[in-house]
Length: 234
Ligand code: PGA
Image (tube, rainbow, N blue to C red):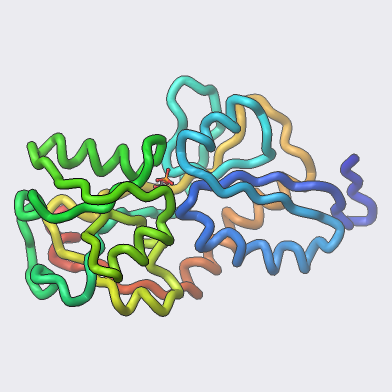
């Protein structure tokens, strides 16, 4: 049971976030849990398809997917930008080029996320729109493994910019300046429509959408997005 005695919040908080949000949400939990030591948190990190399954099953208090699920009635609040960028090893032949045509990626060995990944869906859609057929060399179910595989020279991929935060091996990786990238997406905070949030879930919602958000924007360091691509895609 959730108690809210003398302003002291207590209870359980179940969160379910998209794979790319695992780079920032655990950071935000630190100050939140210090402020409310009576709250214990369970955090599930999974891909888009599984997040949608969990929303349908009402398994958690709050969800952070990249885009609102189809055919499920939800309250949906845009939270943070989630640009998807083309990532290559720093030594890549295209790494110094600007305004690379998307067609130049044809034939490049490509590392693709698993079925059910929202990133994969977005990438397939963009390439299909431009009639680009990519050469999938490897399919991997984790952004982390994809980064290692890129650094290991197995190919290029498309990842959320958030996957490149904070990290030492990010220096072995580079963002390619390809036209039509970044794919502009946004994380959302979602819960089933009409659901009465618990006191604890409401406290977390208020925290992430104000201070938590500011903390991410001010404290995480990312490699810069290619400027020319940004201008091409206002
Ligand atoms: P996913 O994440 O590819 O793990 O489903 C989607 C996203 O964060 O854009």
